[in-house]
Length: 323
Image 1 (cartoon, rainbow, N blue to C red):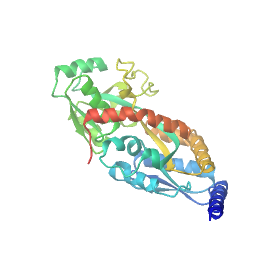
Image 2 (image 1 turned 135 degrees about the vertical axis):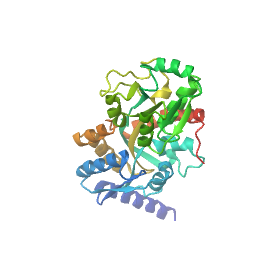
Image 3 (image 1 turned 90 degrees about the vertical axis):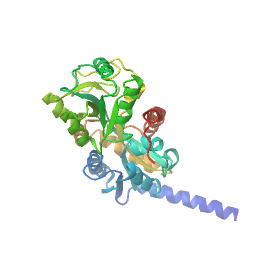
Image 4 (image 1 turned 45 degrees about the vertical axis):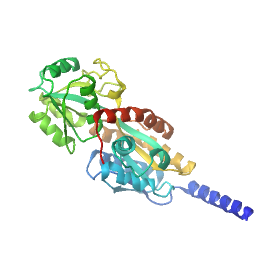
């Protein structure tokens, strides 16, 4: 019986190796845990077109929105580890959800393999120019202290990067500002332009026309570097606020179920890294204010592990919690 068991394991291993050598031999599915038509969906579709040319098989999109992205993530976590079902996602269900939700139906460390972090996006702190007559972050802090208790900021959702960083900014500077959560960036931007809220943190793609019109003013960039589109706008560190909490930017990445065979994972990582640097993908990233990355899976995993404690601290400080 012992030798039969060993022989069985050997045959299984050989079968996996054989499948890895011929991978992919059929269509691949990109599970997007967001509704069709959004930024991540658009990026995933262009990524699918680009990677399918390299891998020689079609890549289809399966939108599975819901529960802050956890429904789609759970589906992939439970999928067969053969490289044919992949998660193309923002940081939400991987980095934010474990600290925001009381119950998460998967364990990121146990249930996923990191393929590649394909892009990241830097957010921008902006104010309504009619309501907030300031030109720098330090001026804004002074202004907010003079209006303590009456300043309102918006975000595109409870627990979003924008919410967590803005809440930290308010708390750490003792400004007692009020948070207004919106169901998306578009409605938040409408109220920011209309003056219903005083300031907010948003993406460059959405802010750009309103910054150009003068209705909004950018005070600082969240992240490690300035934006080419906003060369005169400093980073938060350059503005005098160097905390790591202001560098928790969003990203887009590809993950697979745990235990995908190494040769299959290597093919996926190589295809994803190459695709992220193509002209088509760079153009798609730019539309949404994202920058191309195309990291290794190991670097992707290290980045998530390094950022997780900062996100946990931000969630705790903000008081954001979803049952």
